[in-house]
Length: 120
Image 1 (cartoon, one colour):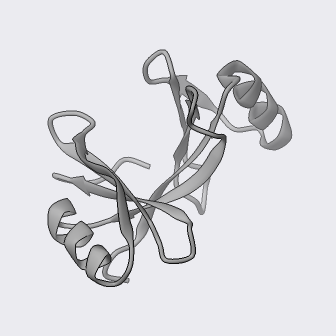
Image 2 (cartoon, rainbow, N blue to C red):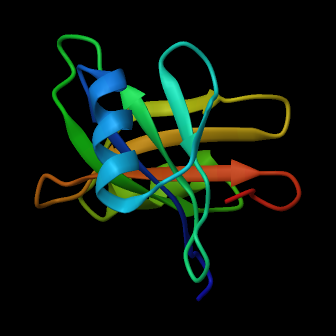
């Protein structure tokens, strides 16, 4: 697959509650990655993701992130196909950036651009 899904994210208002729920429901291990984010460790046969505190007016959500080589170019192409940019290219750190778009059916999907391997 040229552009694999490389990350997933679940967001909600009560981050501590989400962390407790998913740790108990599935035995997920998590580590703090800032006050409003928890990285979920990849399980055997899968890839990692994250839990995020969603601040108003952002509703609770679930999304996946697709790896691309160029966020701006991907968003341009997505726009031509009927998608809408929700969050423009935004740096996560020195080696990774993300963007969000809405597909023609209203689904929110993320894009991830990174230098080097993407830790799961």
